[in-house]
Image 1 (cartoon, rainbow, N blue to C red):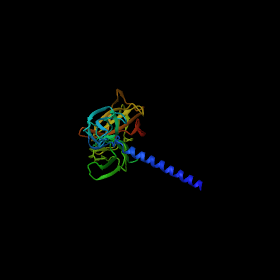
Image 2 (image 1 turned 45 degrees about the vertical axis):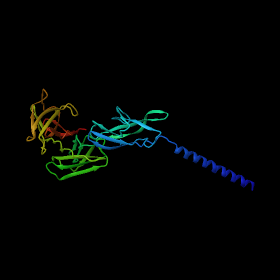
Image 3 (image 1 turned 60 degrees about the horizontal axis):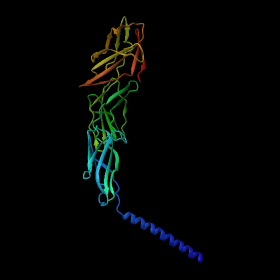
Image 4 (image 1 turned 30 degrees about the vertical axis):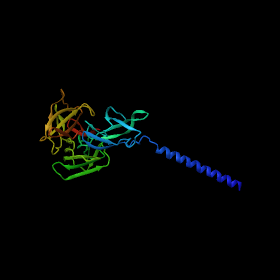
Amino acid sequence: MERTKKLVGRGSALIAALMAVALCALALALLPGKAYASGFTQTAATKDSATITWEDPNAGNSSYVTTGYTVAWGDDHGTTTQSVALPATQKSFTFTGLKPGTKYYAKVTYSYKTTYGSYDDSWLDSDYVASRVVAPTGVKQTKWYYYANSVNFTWNEQEAADRVEYKVCKAGSTKTFAKDSFTYTPTSFSVNKVKSNTMYTVQMRVHDQWGWSGWSKKAYLFTQPMVNAKKTKVKGNKMTVTWGKIKGATSYNVYVSTKEKKGYKKVATVKSSKSSVTVKKLGKKKFSPKKNYYVYVVANKKVGKTTYTSGKHYTYKVKGTRGQLRWTFN
């Protein structure tokens, strides 16, 4: 019986202690204190600006009064290179002069005063803000695999983009040959089942939290002209190079070297109507049917002030009247 009374007594003491702790916590919660900082939100953007807004972290608290804000920002994560001081009445800021489709690191701090004194640089929030994406630029072919019927192309990535889409058509047609979209933003793409000696166009667009950009201007995709090994030869002191035409090309450049992997010189540029050229010299030296030469041809497509190129991937070895596919460029 006595043991039972002791247990009951201890239980009552424990309950009383817990109630005391709870009452103390409630009392502390009711005391005036600094409000929790809720952070900022990006509310608008253009291709060269971004706007953020925030709430007064001390709103409704008579013991703590916000006296001003400082907004700082920079190009790199965690780095701020510019800043501006704002009055307590201002709770928004617009960053200007930004690069399109670019993320910037931003940080907002505030100062406040109490009956005990004034305090500066209290943290409100830090996060990324971004300008709006624009129609992609720098869309161009990087490599056409003649024997695999595949072409790769790239673009100037915009870090603020969260999705990307492309569409490929045969040149002169609006019918889509291939298309794809991604919920991320790869820097290069591959399209299969393209036909050699056929020219294609590609357009791209990107998406951010505000929606889709416009489509990029058309970029042209086409194979490198393949050298005709049987008709490409050195006879006497002259070299004749012959290749297959690319429909839609506006010109061709011919390159020759005495070494397989370097030292190529442009020896001729001809109009699209031609598919062969005879060259008398490589630099200041005449050609010799007893020497090895390496040859490749590049096709060009000029549209306005922009010239698209097939690039170089395949080269041919030529000695006398014999030629053969020799090497692929990386």
